[in-house]
Length: 233
Image (cartoon, rainbow, N blue to C red; front, top):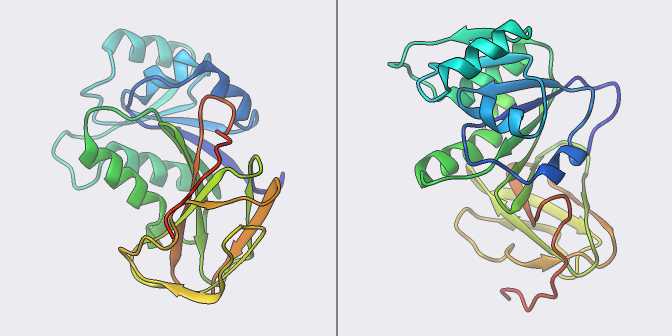
């Protein structure tokens, strides 16, 4: 995990398919655990107690909700007709509860629109002051923002790293430790130039002057996938 011990951390579970049990070893043990609706089931499958449950609860099983409440989980129930997804409400709850570092766990599912919306939420300007990262399906994702300190990237040598600009151009990008370096360069939304870069060693970094990047790495269970890449060049 990136971040420091002084940063309050929340692990937020999206309503999704269950995730590999080994992922629990990668999550911070002292985090506030928040579930968005049926994310309650995903958290429980990892053996984690949910501190706070958020959403319209149209997907969470009522027996599971009752059991969670009996075990001390607090619930913030919203109407079904609302202007934000359950996950956005869960992110807002994390902020209200004092988190400044949010780790999303999303096992994916059959709703591509939900997955895309969840990933864009990570990069939302509303959370620009937060450290945002995620484990989504087979990917590990972190957010690098303009004007912030360098974002550390860790993984096996030769494993993939993809840099995707979102919300506008990412400018003044400087990377260190990647096979195809960027030296004060820009990436425009929709470009594929940042796809399938590679780690040279076990650690690299990326920094930019303005804009936002999603830093995407392959992830399988508790281990990043180390794969030699031809890449998109």
